[in-house]
Length: 171
Image (cartoon, rainbow, N blue to C red; front, side):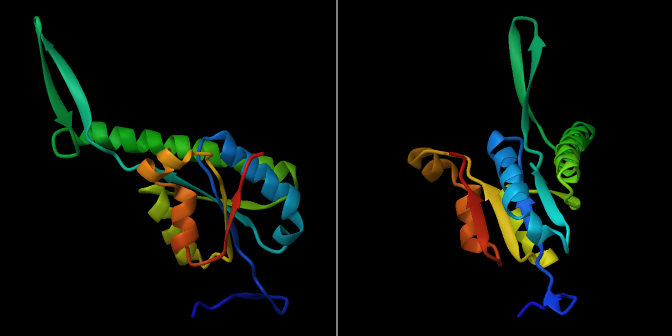
């Protein structure tokens, strides 16, 4: 069983909010600050954002009236893929810094974390690595069909995260 750090004789409760660029994540952040602020006085709020892994990008080259399509991958164009990774990291850090500023304006200390990978597994991995006590996510509002086809990050985390998960639904 995981060990729980003690602060002043009480177990330290680590809360992590996983965000993306959606309005649902922003709503979840504001909800956490409004409803869990007293719980966040003894330890920081961890704010996490996954960076999507690079994928193969189609590239079209014009050859007169013909077009040639080829896949750009880490093998064929490592500089391009590294550039995409770096831009994804910058974007994630910009969102995280904005969230951290919102927390600071409400008197909450926040630590930001980003990792590359599929959001579902990256969130669950960080929860386990940091021994998080509670994970908070915003619900994206996918319909039943989209959720079945695409999968839901919140559904996955409810099933596989090694802590209680709070899914904040925007009214």
